Image (cartoon, rainbow, N blue to C red):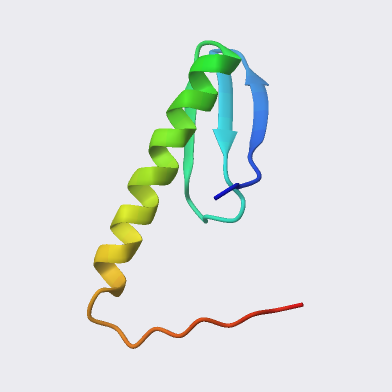
Length: 64
């Protein structure tokens, strides 16, 4: 899957977040590090979401 991410320069390096996944963010000293870190953050976010939804009634909805 592809997700849009927002990468911003900070005093400490780079901050990166995924607007499509509320609260999913990371950081790094370099752009490359920040991008790798957010990949891990997205994977962890999705794994956690699957666990939370495991016992819920879930539907898929297509929006054009």
